[in-house]
Image (tube, rainbow over all chains, first blue to last red; front, top):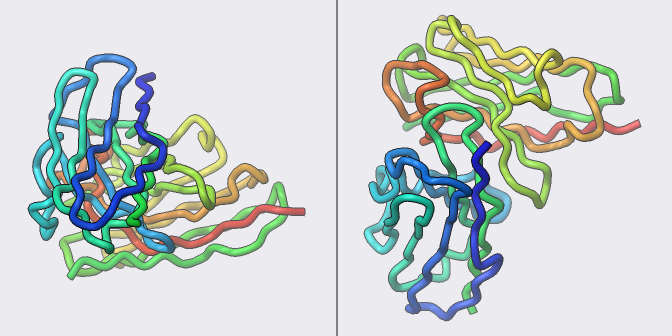
Length: 108
Length: 125
């Protein structure tokens, strides 16, 4: 089973700064099946990115995804206070739809 | 507007049963696979079970295989999760989720574009 590792565990940045979150798979995966979710405290996760780089409906342009092979990243260009959340990557395309452990983004 | 509303969570003793429900609206329910995903409070996300649009195929995580049963009623736009022989480690928030892929087979996508608010299941003696 493929394992997803996310780094860093926590990212603390100021508003307006750029955040880069990493997701690494234990083996090469298809970029067509890599997603990113945002979960704010007390809320359900929200789909941000699918297919490694396609923004989901209604997601602001400051969120972008990239990567291929084993290494993927989510970039938040110009952090806003409401971006404080935990971000999960997920490998989909069928069960078990493995999620990474998450990266917590804190806004100073 | 897509809405998924779960119900049925609560406090239950180990070995007992519980049935979760999810009422869907805002989309054509029978065009999509549906899934249950759980999250231990403060921890990560785990796919629990999925069901295809016509109930023809279903899948389960190894951790719940043989104890949980997923079902759906397309006439009622509803998804269910029957949970038997509950264990302490089943304690989690259970989310009802919609698969993004049109066409509805649970094992072809598992990209989840809409989530309910979740219902908390606490298994404790």
